[in-house]
Image 1 (tube, rainbow, N blue to C red):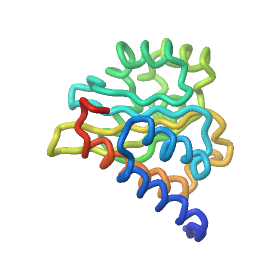
Image 2 (image 1 turned 90 degrees about the horizontal axis):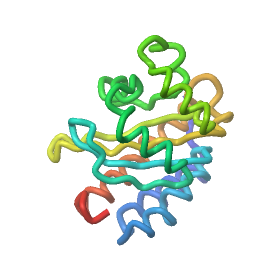
Image 3 (image 1 turned 120 degrees about the vertical axis):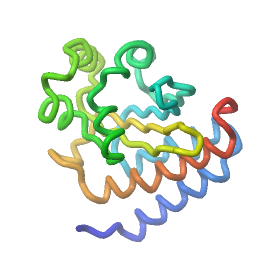
Image 4 (image 1 turned 60 degrees about the horizontal axis):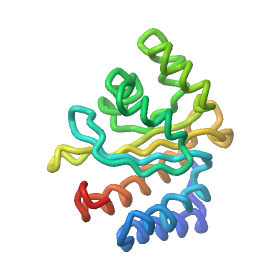
Length: 179
């Protein structure tokens, strides 16, 4: 296992601190979510909080196509093998591993086609459950993940897990409806 560099650790700790200090949705977006690109390579990012029935309560979107999110949240999330795999393991999920290797038959042809139409074939998703509130925070990083290679780089997984915790706490401290 590779060790995070001092610079990577400082960036992660700064992002986590900013999660806890952010007072608004805009501060969370600009002080936390956009700087994540320095640690986790991606072009589009989405963070949402939802309940046990997969009803999305709130979304913070950075560069995801709006039409794709609308269709996904209203129709496709309920049968998405990636979400089911994440809910059963609570580990980061690489999209291509889930959709094309582990569950190719269970993945909706419409989801695959829509993802290709919006150039969202590569990515990684992760999140944290909050059993007390019966909610989960879900983070989705898409496109330009060439640094990850064919399997998740250990440092990237650690970075995503560390930052997810801070983002989750930031959203939780304000309550679902204020963000």
